[in-house]
Amino acid sequence: MQTYARNSAGRGDSRTFLMCRPSHYAVEYAINPWMDTSQPVDAALAASQWETLKDAYLAHGHEVVELEPQPGLPDMVFSANGAFSVDGRVYGARFRYPERSDEAASHADWYADRPDDWAFHAPRFVNEGEGDFTYVEGPGLILAGWGFRTDPAAHAEAGEVLRRPVVSLRLVDDRYYHLDTALAVLDDRRICYLPEAFSADSQVMLRNLFPDAVIATEEDGAAFGLNFVSDGENVFINAEAEALGEKLAAEGFTVVPIDLSELKKGGGSVKCCTAELRR
Ligand code: ARG
Image 1 (tube, rainbow, N blue to C red):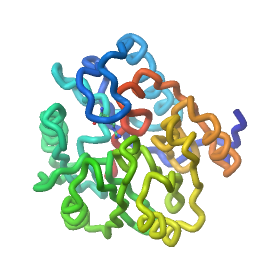
Image 2 (cartoon, helix red, strand yellow):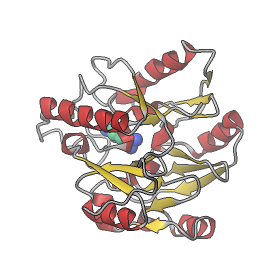
Image 3 (tube, rainbow, N blue to C red):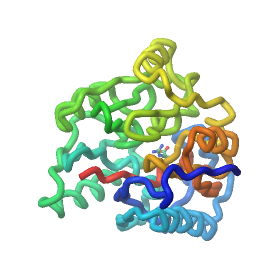
Image 4 (tube, rainbow, N blue to C red):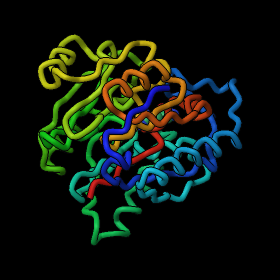
């Protein structure tokens, strides 16, 4: 795969990521179309794939902090869903399905235990953290998904808590049940997204707001390519999404492919396993 570093160090801005080791990861229930309980998960492989992602972040100068995995919460590895933070203010999650609802407390406690760094706000409305919320630093804009998991009322609540305007985007394809399976932020102003995952009206909104966006294809979406993490220079992306990786490399990003095939069985990839802590 072609790569191209925009600065000599090949390093983007240093980020802090909250990750949760897949110690109890399994596909024990099906709450999205990717999950098939009859398909076995290789726990040892999932663990080594997760470790590779963590090591890639560290190798690129990012900080990784770990949340303690809890037995009985097999989806906890998808730490992106636990909260959404901007400028040290934190909007907590409230999960749609009972299978995951106990995850919210672990995240809430983590922030509450660090009151000098974080102001945690418990949510009134159902929302799945960075699964359905993302932040575009340049314009100071929150992008938010609804349609499958997050209650649109949570968008207004998040905007108040985080003191930022929110753009509500409607998801219409259940394979792309979270915003972070269909859209990702590349740097402080550019995004990449799969238009077909959004309603026709939301597509118009995205075109108007982000005329220079990188447009992904159905194939990129199905390879979980949109579920990437970018530090503005390096894009950590599911290895299966080769075509999107090449497209982003041609746009000047350094592509870091990570094989997360076992996590895909749970309906997640790079971004789902990564909560960005924005202090
Ligand atoms: N099995 C999990 C669920 O359906 C996957 C969550 C993926 N996380 C994400 N940020 N998209 O809730």
